[in-house]
Length: 190
Image 1 (cartoon, one colour):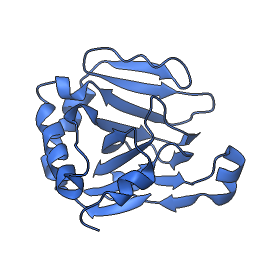
Image 2 (image 1 turned 45 degrees about the horizontal axis):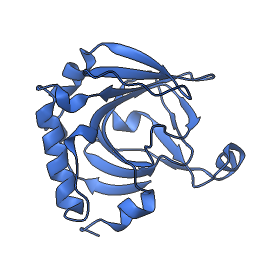
Image 3 (image 1 turned 30 degrees about the vertical axis):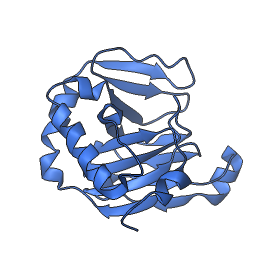
């Protein structure tokens, strides 16, 4: 996990939480066919042994109320990475976690991401590793605590998890089909 530093003023983004939380919440079973509806919704992930909850907004940009959030994030990220990476506002989503999210790798071609803390980011610990097996992950993971307003590049093709509390933690996330190393090497403000 790589800290990009403080990249946003969270006060500009807090109102979007209530909007996203008003969406219908659907359940996706981790490892099953990945089918996303064509309308804005929240998608909550379920997995065996999962004690916490991880939820992503989907079709976020198609909701006119959340479009400004997506456009602002694309503008911020473009200032850090453009012209090397062309950002798509359709890939900006709101992420909510509570409790502990077991070690996992992301699905649906999400190989790496940038997560940006917007509320209670420090209420959980992210564990991450470059290990290819769960056993090696348990032996060699690192820890990080996110901060509100900061952006983080995370390798989601490798095992990662969250050790949290019952406090809802909110982040804005941008998922890539490119690797962690490719994204990290594209930063203009190195």
